[in-house]
Length: 346
Length: 258
Image: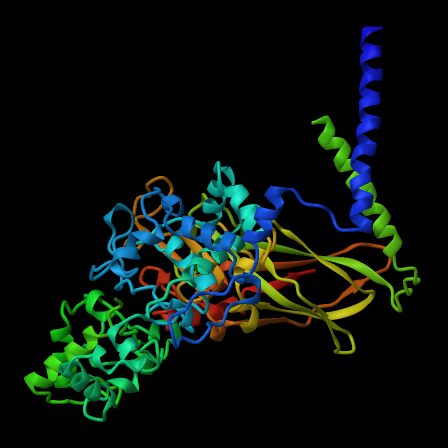
């Protein structure tokens, strides 16, 4: 009897609650549903925001399925700095792209899990939103897909992105954050989008040169102005490749660094012998603070780099015809380096 | 818990009513031709032995090897009718794995057929599209272990991994079932996309019975002209000549078992 009474009570509660929850559903059909405070917060965090760019920078192309929202950017930032992405949970994106080192790492080649040394120099991520392809050889076409590469690279995180997703699903905080940002549980799709979304918030464009360009002629020293004239003139010819507000045309060029290349560069992607030794032209913004230089970090100082271009580099059948001996004087070299230092963000 | 169930039911009811109200009332047109379900049975043999991941196998050139993984993509499947016209099975990408032999191809028109064509690989557009957009159950999603190169964005069309005996005397000793030297072939890139054309066959698809077409891959053909004692590693990139030889062999290793 007791159990029967209980079951009646149960039934009563069930019927009553059924109607309580049915009414708002009908209201939802007729009008709009009134949201509670938490929903409103999620809504605000999911509003598409306008990225804050340095003056004179074009608005970057952004995939329509990954428009920036506060929730996405915050999730991406958490993931970017979380070593959960690596097999032994020691390496995050931020290990080699450090905010206080202009999102680079100052090492010739980056160090992954178990002290493994990578193949190439880690570039700064500032202004990465403008890169039409990623990596020194351009082997990956989008910031989103790029996220996969360091995760499964043997010398970087040496892990499996599907296993990263399993970890994220079991995590105390991430499932809710993924739900808020991408309306789904942790997935390869949302993981790659979130990190890319964060990376599209990283810009550098507040240098002395930018002030000078913004009609403040005193922002540059006379030596920097001389260097600038060399840089943009036919004498230095730097601007042919290091052009535009990102100071790169993103082309792949052989700059005569070696006669024989240990790393074939762009040819690794195309399998075309005429691409051997070609690497993507890097940005020169913040170049003063992102040593060492070249794809393999083989040059420690700007002086070495300028000397290389002044001499014209090694002979190579694929060398860009623009790379010719410049025979710069010491004064010209000093001026050029002064100008390059005027590209450092304040 | 109770409250959640009730609200869930209420929402379901609400959605159901909404859906019913939107139901398309037009009659579904009857198919013009009769169709039948076709499935593809993909088996793998080495000579006359079925593939396994514990045995020692020997190439026709006499070199010993073991296998730990063998998977490949099949796409652009077309059935050639007796009149020479083709029935394409569009949008189907199969990731062939010896652990699974049967792959559903869906409905195809009833009739007599004289050929089967398919590609080993992924068409260039899909090959360079974003793999992260596919749900985990789709063969084109990122696999574990991987079938996609992130450093040169594109799929690995065929992956074979194992070990091989590189001694001249065939006397290498196995450790935990593996020879001392690893053997791996990761074949991909658009230029190595190949069509397989299995003609001179004949099969009928009847309205009454579900049809299974049995295609067999013989790995002895995969190694034709390959000396695995020296040619035992290819990531495609950086070893195009070997990858190309293997790819051309892939085209010859299939036959229809009738």
